[in-house]
Every structure is written in C-alpha cells, then in structure tokens.
Length: 116
Image (cartoon, rainbow, N blue to C red; front, side):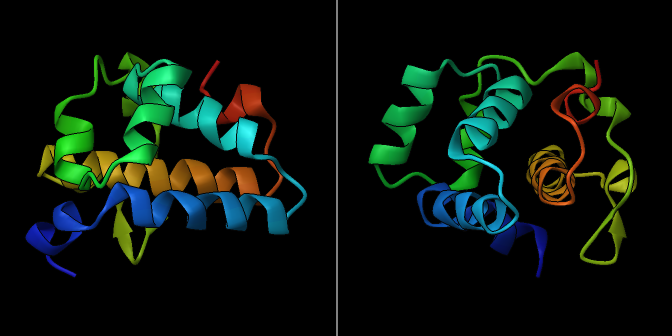
C-alpha cells in the first residue's frame, strides 16, 4: 500500500480493528487508548471526539498535539518494512501505532510499550 493510500485510510475505521486485535489477546480498549494518547498527545476526550467523526490518518496525525519524543525508540518491522526507516512522517506515525498495537497484542507490558 502506498504512502498516499495509507494516509487516506479513515482512522475511525481502523480504530475498532485495533481494539478487536487487543481484545482477542485479552488486552483492553483502555490500553489501546493509552497507547494512542501517549503517541499523539491527544487527551482521552480529544481521542473520543476524533473517533466520533470520520477522520483520516493524515488529519488525525496532522492535528496531533505532540508526537511523543520517545516514539523514535520504536523499532521493528510492520508489513515487511522497518518503521524506523520510513521517510514520510505521517506513514511512519501510522506504522508506529501499528507496531505499538502489535506489541500490546503480543503481551508486552505497558511500560515497555510506552518506552518508559
């Protein structure tokens, strides 16, 4: 999938899939929300507002208050591509989020996921 295609996906469509993936592995919606808020700087209320409207990833990350400075510590492969090597910032943030949700589903502790 190209950078343009990924950034135009609706966050509001993918968000429930993140929750389903976490819940299948006995994790919670609250943990998914914590990860998203950590990465983006959104408050829980702001996140709820974005989930309630149709918003694409480009807008979602473009309006993010502050991408967490420790996000650069997120390393690994998502969809066959190293997240740390992605040049486009929006695509990289999307793949960072994908990687964090993968780590949650694999049972990592929240401290490790949030790079604390």
